[in-house]
Image (cartoon, rainbow, N blue to C red; front, side, top):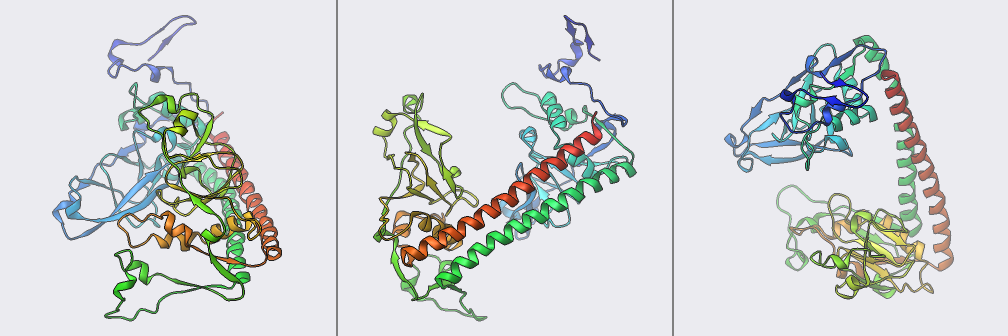
Length: 444
């Protein structure tokens, strides 16, 4: 119990076990519903399985991220998993104790096929008085996030143990009231999902439009059961998967040229981190692949100095240059961007510059590469490290209709992009509204 006065706050000595006092300054929870400590409502789930005992069996491993929550991460044979992994059942909630304050929380649902998660995660279930979906939403509110921050420990790496999670008090309506609150939230989210699907459908329409007008066709190889033979000369990447992926035919309606006939292709570099003067007070934008998201770039997360530019392989590129991410995690590889400013890039970016506008409209070329995203990614298949390189980019085939047709295509794609942007913005606003209404329904 914290004793307070306008001047002095005192904390019992016994409560200083973790040398961290911020948990004692937690704001009072205001709600029209009963407020209960989570210690009364949760069960920690610690059942584990030593997967290495089953060396040849495949096990599905779960992950948790702040972007998607819980997801099916990968499968692995037991012989490659040395540590015991926790068992996660439907409606169990798991979080990363080091990243829970940034939303790294997930809930297991039927659509997730995997069952095991690293012992590093905190896993728990709810008792009968608390619906797991209600608590999961509650844990994503701004109010709860503040409570999480107040209850994490450690001066450098903030950690929320299950013990400290249980010290948090939350509003607990009756089960019937929880269901009503969840139903109202889900009705709004259903409308969000409709908008997001509509945005996806419209976006897919742009891909279909591009392929149709340029008469680009994908053909999957017709592999038969049993033995299939691939010529040795075609295994240019020492892997057969590239030779079994789709083959793309670009029709003779318009000429097709390699990219290097339309522009120069360069790259960038990373000034040594051992020299702070290459970064400190820098004013030259330095773009990384994580910033390449099919959008226009008008600034960068990091800047470098003139000294950093001069002492590295980084190059300064002019506005209207195009960037293609050659490698990066997840969906990064193959994504594009257009520079609205002078900027440098790291070595993971290919930069298309000095584009011959007598042959190609810059936005047409940009949209063309966005349309080719999946095909470009397949270029890198067959390697242990599936990355693109400058040679692949330079030789990439570009269908080149007359400039008048290119500009018609750009105009049409711009209309589609605006429609997609508007739909996604509506969905974003509606999602925030659902979150706000949920929070206001349980907190005063």
